[in-house]
Amino acid sequence: MYSDTHFHFEHTTIRDNKENTVNGAEILTAMAKRKCYFGLDIGTESDDLLMRQACIDTAIAQMKDTILADKVRKFIYFSAGIWPSVEEIKNRFNSMKTLKEQIAKAEADNDNETLNRKIIAIGECGLDHHWNPGGVDGRCESDFNQQMFLAEKELFELQLEYAKELNLPVIIHSRDAFEDTLDCIKNAGYDNGIIHCYSYGAEEAKAFLERGWYISFSGGVTYTKKSKMEGMKALLTLVPEDRILCETDSPYLAPVPLRGTLNTPVNVEHTYKFIAEIRGTTPEQLSNTVDENIKKLFNLTV
Image (cartoon, rainbow, N blue to C red; front, side, top):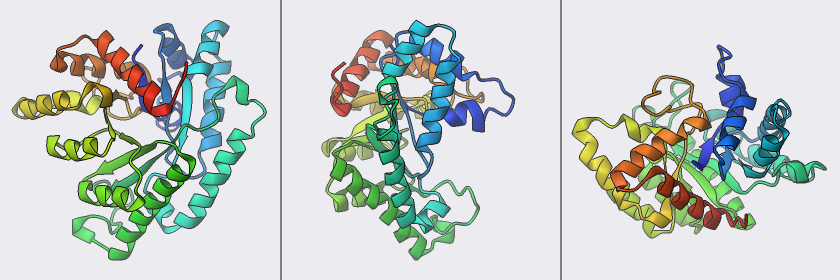
């Protein structure tokens, strides 16, 4: 129960775990104990897939209960993709080559039967015109640079085309870039996947839904102010049962009442409860609905 369609396990347990407050084995144990159906570890860098798989391998090896460890091996899956950082954008062709090499190496691993090493999605990839981790990067209105802007779109479209070639869903990151995201999707001619950590309104959701995309909500929805709650309710009830997903995006966006703390996949339960109440259902029923959508989207038979 309470599947998480988007988390960054290595970031949660190593990179952002500065105070050593999160134990990977304990997270996986908790997920297995509550009978989690599905957990998707998401890629953000062209060369991070093997490292991410090794991180989860290590955490599984540290689990005390071998029966629960076996369950984890069955419900953890991986994507591979390139988030639009300035460095990856500038080196986009080499980055795509590296990404493909990582995927090939993972799938050739002799230990494939003990962990789902074959990726089931491309991403996260997309456009981000809000967050500038390195300061001025040419993608926002205040410092717009046409060359960087076009290169970012090209990196995104290269991944859409690669996903189309592999017939895999795409995990899309789109922030302050709705129209450009839609343009790239149209250019690639591929509508298959998730708009993750959805941050637009109801009208934009309709545009994605009409093209066949799934909408995934993170703990960010629990931050909604009272003045904007009616709009959030309209959005959360607009998305049909067969297109809704839930995620943590951990270690980011811990849901209320844990806002401000390091997020983990265990906390996705709070997001399910928040959304279920607005949609007039139970968290358990919403969880079952999400699991059915996961099966369909990722073509899972178990």
